[in-house]
Length: 453
Ligand code: PHE
Ligand code: NA
Image (tube, rainbow, N blue to C red):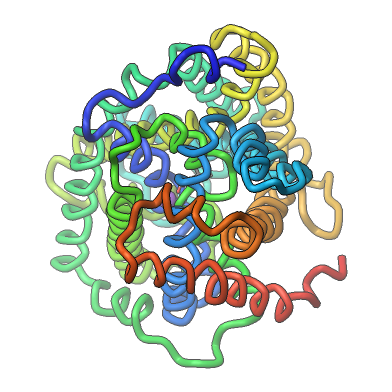
């Protein structure tokens, strides 16, 4: 195995891991998915449960995953197997790693379609194709972009190619540098959109929608969606953060890094909500519009503001880049697993993975046109990939990970790896032993009825 012969490659520079992890976390989950599911599940109560899940489940699981990666020095499968062996436990636990790897891959299969939307809108902005459209036109533009499989397939194929090109080049080049200017740029664009909302109306209503909650308005399904989204948005239980953690130098504080990534991710999501919902309300659109929500609303705002074409182009450029820095992290687990275990070169592993990915993502892409009716229990391929990963695999994988860390492994393993002083360590242990697993179980049991397909 590679890591026993030569030291594993590590992130460059002090900020390398943090930039890469932030790049993985901040993406379409924050700007596309968070607003649209918040709209579907009715706002405030959903947001509150989501925030609670980030704190009570997301943060402890993220610390655990990074520690697994850094201690086990490998893809989720290899890292978990090594760490478990160190404690003399059964290597069957590495099944959690297999599930995580599969999960990252499945997510990427539909993520490239959404990233393709972002690229398509970048092109529309740049070429002026959206100028002068009314609220009504917006839905038609989105649908027209989906209706032709050659068009939609072009964009998702482009994203797949770009992702594999970057992944094939290796972890150290490019990622860290692009995140350091793209992230502030994205935040700036969101701030601009929020300011626009404040001046042009709808802001107060949006604020109330997001932050005033009336208890009891949230369904079991909404709770499960909030939990699943906490995993999704922080890139957890999908191999991404664990594998990135395996490149983390020993001296870096896992707790501090986790907190900054979680805070950055949450701030971007809330800003996205505050940027998008004013446009929705000011134009009398439906918050529960679904996956097209941001693409149907944001161009209206850009159209109405000075230098809108420029700002709109910059926004979709940065959204597309944020999507790419997330996409590359989803296959990092698979690619590093192929390299470490099958002696493949990075390039070969990336392109091999890319071909399988392209086939599955094409099925997901067809869900918006030819395959819209290829459904099982009312969900098409795109819907199933999203549902299985967010609502089932990630919460289960996270549960497995905290149970492993909290109860199964020798207690010194994580004490050493996290390097925390007694009080924060006790807090982490309480979270992974009781708070996170109970939180996941309660939401799961409550939602059990949903699994009767
Ligand atoms: N966290 C990313 C986002 O919010 C999505 C992601 C999920 C990335 C799983 C890696 C792994 O867009
Ligand atoms: Na995110």
